[in-house]
Amino acid sequence: MKNISKILLFAIILFTYSVSNTFASDIYFIDFAKVMNESKAGKKAQDYLKSSLKSSNKKFKETAKKIKDEENKIISQKNVLSKEEYKKKADELRKKVFNLNKERETSLKNIASKRKKAKDELFKKLNPILSKYMEENKISVILDKKNILMGNKNFELTTQIIEILNKELKSISLN
Image (cartoon, rainbow, N blue to C red; front, side):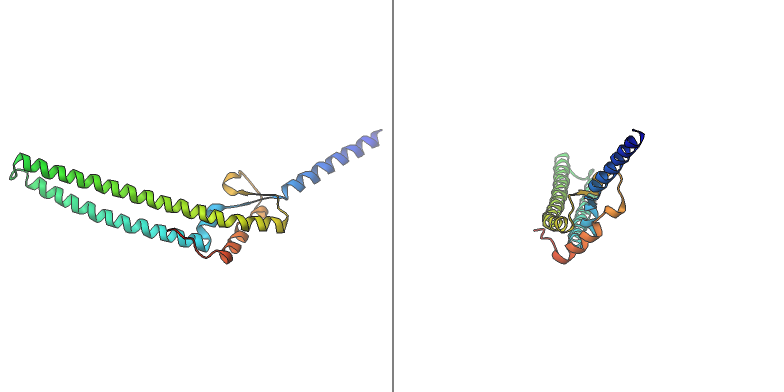
């Protein structure tokens, strides 16, 4: 009886260990942010968006400087201008500031929209690649690294997926 219980306990432990290893070996993860930032297509999209943001910020800074100069000019003429004329110029200046802020907000929304579009496009192109990779390597699940608390580095596929993606996708259309 003692031997049977030892054999049964050993069989249960062996079964549990093999089942847990089977499940664990079918689950892998990728770092989607790294794929987005380090793949050729992702880098091109990021560079384009950064340059767009930089050029629009430059344009807005120049416009803001002109408005600030105009404000200083109006303030310096306060004692020379009539109240109505001063008020009219101050109102025009406020409208310019309001329009500048509105344009800046629109520009930022446009860039954010393009960034989301690039991310969605990359994910759309990545899905068939992941499906094929999963099928070829008999993988059950691939998770995004940001949703994993802890994982063995041996189950990370980011580098392999970036290599495949670089071969199949050279750029992303943002227009």
